[in-house]
Amino acid sequence: MPEQMPPIENLLLRLIADSHNVPLVIQVGALLLSVLLGWLLVRLLSPRVARLEDSWAAGAAGIRTVGLPFAILGCTWVLRELLGLRQSELHLLNLAIPLLTALVIIRLLVHVLRYTLKSGETLKNWERSISWVIWIAVALHVAGVLPRVRAALDTVSFEAGAHRFSLMTLLEALTVIISAVILALWASQFIESRLMRVPNMDLSLRMALTKVARTFLLVLAVLFALPAVGIDLTVLSVFGGALGVGLGFGLQKIASNYVSGFIILLDRSVRIGDMVTVDNKYGQVSQINTRYTLLRALDGTESIIPNEMLISQTVINHSFSAPDIRVGLPIQVSYSSDLDKVRELMIAAARSHPRVAQGGSEEPKVYLHEFADSGINLELSVWIKDAEEGQFSLRSDLYWAIWKLFREEGIEIPFPQRVVHLVPEKSA
Image 1 (cartoon, one colour):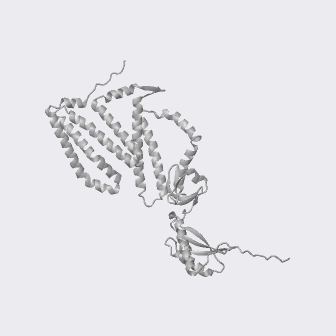
Image 2 (tube, rainbow, N blue to C red):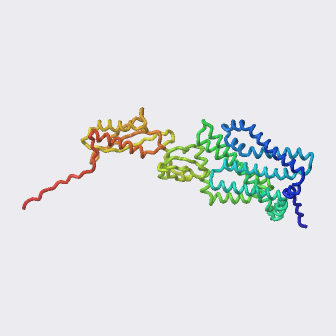
Image 3 (cartoon, rainbow, N blue to C red):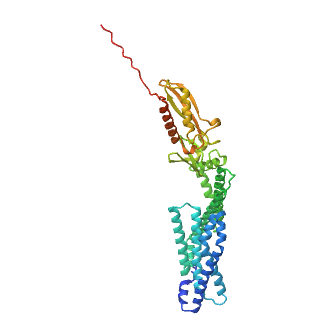
């Protein structure tokens, strides 16, 4: 015997049928009263929401987004229950409650998505998809055909061992899993915002705790979502074994990069903001993600470095223990130059630059390297504390200043010369 379809209860047709009755006017008044009460309630709570802005900005924004429709929904539900004590036909309020509920859910989910995901085309697609799905479900509920749609989807089923899966079960599982994942991402984003405000904790440690919390919450969300819709976790044992084999072979590199990412964040050998050289690429570490590290060069280009390379290869960290780095500028002067005067001019040019550190062991110095063929090779050694600003402009400024001082003092910078001796021919 085929399963009997549930009866159709069309709320909209019932409302049209009661359009000439006096109780409808009472319901319209109750709905308007709900709007007024909800607006007043939001106005009364707005000072407390403003005080919440400093400690939890995302929560305050969410209350502003969902507060008014949620307050109207609550007032409408209370008034419907009170009117239900005197009259049984409340079709307008029965229609308003699912519409307000849909509006609250849409606004809440959109706010959570905007707080969790970055703005972009993907976020807009998610917002549109969620809105369409919810409004279609509300339309089916209002038309009274939603129970029949559910029953029809439940008839399309298949069995896997002792378990029966229907199309309705899969849709419910998908909805619950997506909702649980979004909630987990929102919770991880909340934890990250709290951890980033801890001033006495190292940034790499905060990032590591954030990544661990996000991974743990996502796994926990899936483990709780599947049993919630009646899917036994033991069914996934075969899939888990296949996934383990895949990780051992095809996904070995990906798994290695993920593990390496956690190791980097925990041992703090490479931190955000460090100036490093890896694989002949020099730049500042701008992001440390679970799979890769983003290295931003001084010319603006960004290199995606797999985390495994930062573990298995030699990494030159120019700011690991201290942010100071040494910069050497080679300069050649002629043999006729006064070297003491040359040293004074080069040190004066270095001291005039605001980026050059001065005092103690970081005082600018001039070293004599060698006596070359065309002149004397010297090197100006300076220390800087802002390696992230690069060295190109610093070298250019110092060379300009040295050139100007040399021209004023008559110091010659030699260039390669060749002396040719002409031997006269002997007369016969």
